[in-house]
Image (tube, rainbow, N blue to C red):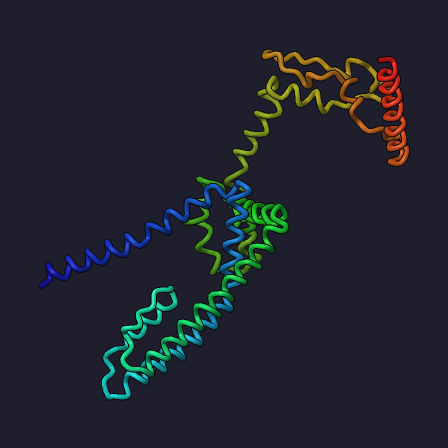
Amino acid sequence: ADEDTAAQFKLESFQVLSCIAPLIWMRLITVFDGFKYIGTMQICVARMLRESGIFFVLLAIVGIGFAQSMYAIDAADGHTDRANLIINNLIQGLLGSPDFSGASNAWALWIYYFWNVFTTILLLNILISLFSSAYDDVTDDASAHFLAFFAGKTVSMIRAPDKYVYPAPFNLIETFFVAPFEWLMSKKRYAKYNRIVMTTVFLIPLIVIALVESQLDVRASLIIRNLYDHVDEGEEEDPKNQDPETDHEDGMEISRVPFKELVKEFPNSYQSMESSILAEINALKHQIAELSEKLDKK
């Protein structure tokens, strides 16, 4: 008997795990939600499910009423052994595959007719209209919805869980030596304790990093230092400052485009926006005039 029970439990556990497979595959969709189309579709589905709340409320209320009615009609003869069959017939009717042969008498058959008419014609059309309105709301401004969705997901991933962050592997110190005291100390004392632990743990690594970046590895930071070196007033026009050269071993350059070419693409800060627009219009007029002259000569 024990072996049969164990075998039955194993079978049921395997069946339960088999039902999880669709959820696992649906979870893979979140891997691609960085793409606009897939992310927008996820937003649409979430909005549809949220908007369908009124449908499920109406369905629950109406379903309870019809189930009670059919159960009462069936129990009128003193036998109440068809409860599971009634629920099954109602669900089949809702899904579009009604079984009219399951009605016990004419009254139950008429109630079952009304159930199918109500769910198929009214409730399902309400659900379709809710889905349609939710889809339109999202697709009308899909870019904004997707950017908000992506920004929210990014913030949720990078947001620190608390004020005192211990990156791995130092989070083990927090787990065993800091977190257990949170409930035993006041907020002020717990904050002070965290600062002491973090200072003790991170002081030496931060000092080493600062020394390496500032003193020991000078060549690697030479380009950055040159970029932030102060230029004396009046030396901005010096070609050496406009197109500085680097002494990096790999021949790296700050910019492959000369400074004068870059400046040509900048807007003229000495002109207002209206003046810039008028200047561009005048330049366009001259180009059109030159083009007209060339066409007339031909």
